[in-house]
Image (cartoon, rainbow, N blue to C red):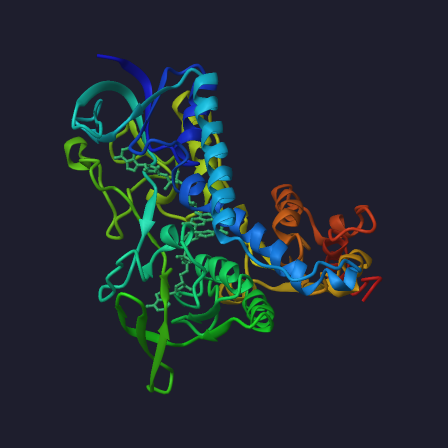
Length: 466
Ligand code: FAD
Ligand code: NAD
């Protein structure tokens, strides 16, 4: 029987990063993945394919709406949707192959099959033909991720009533896509199909879209997406969803208690994801779960069984690829006796719509609730020379700083390239910068990052360009 210092179950951005870090630290490492390709949700049916389609559809939208103003004539444009999906598949397969390369490079043994606990130190791997291989593991890291969740009365038929997985591989552009849930998936995939010509209606239970983000971001994003003709039905409670061979019929109750009916050809259910532990036989190892179906862990991501750890979407916290990866590194380093630390307040969140939305730290709502005194500086993107040059004028950067110490407590931005710009704010906050520190730091001109400096200057009412 093969014996490993560490066995990782699941090869998403949590699992594969944990495996590489373990191998770097000299641990004999195995990784078990039930699918034939490595990379988990993120690489196969999540971050990477959604961004590939967002990029393709953005080019198309730009070509239709903005090229002429730049002096570029294109003639009549059309979409080759099959080619768009094929390119997305190519991007996915190249990225997944990259993980196989990294496993070989780091001498990590890859097992294909479902991993399940035999006991606390033995893992069974059942392949597609039902053949079981057992390996011994001194330590195990559970990184089995999450699956789309749904509402009790909705039957996901994967044809008309679909999840993000099917929405990333449709055979046709929907005529009318009805999206249940105005969170990250609903807005990103809703944007893809709106840009490609679908009518898109988003039904959201809460009064605002992306309800956990700073209210400024939800309001500004909704305003921008409304201009792109996405229809929003906030404060609507979906009461029934019926898929037939050709259409979907949905009813919802608005805040006045009136019944509203929707008819479309596809319904995307994007109301969140649930931790995935099916088939792990956690009971055989005695690993405890929370009431919400997550694996219970302490601050070092150790379960109640000391040699078994859990990371990523299957444990508490934001369901984000970079959060899962940070946790993978933390556990590997903990196993070899190091003392790593993650500041969860500084895990950035991004929505890859256009304009992009990105945030780190506390929202104004959270600071108000906690009774923390703060000051705010904002800067409009349209005041930037770079924004006028590229015609990406929408959005703003808002910086929240402690009223007494001036330490930056939160940065919330909407605008072109916000997804990349947020890194500057994360670094600043990691080093506990004050808004004045950033206000006094040189930012290249003309760039979008000048909006961060100007927003920091605005905290003390000394913004130059607004
Ligand atoms: P996963 O990536 O879910 O990987 C778990 C792996 O474990 C899977 O491959 C699964 O097959 C395997 N597995 C499960 N059980 C077993 C078993 N018993 N034996 C063997 N293998 C098993 N996050 C971002 O940060 N940025 C984004 O832009 C982004 N976009 C997204 C877009 C979409 C459409 C979706 C659905 C998600 C997106 N996410 C994004 C979220 C991100 O994909 C997840 O947070 C991330 O994949 C979680 O990583 P993980 O390693 O915990 O689990
Ligand atoms: P989400 O939690 O972001 O959004 C779900 C939305 O559905 C919320 O706005 C919620 O209020 C709404 N909702 C819940 N019940 C509802 C109901 N009955 N009727 C109408 N609306 C309802 O979840 P998601 O968009 O499904 O994404 C799942 C996870 O994947 C998220 O945790 C997210 O972090 C991750 N993800 C991240 C990215 C990214 O980082 N860019 C992209 C996609 C997904």
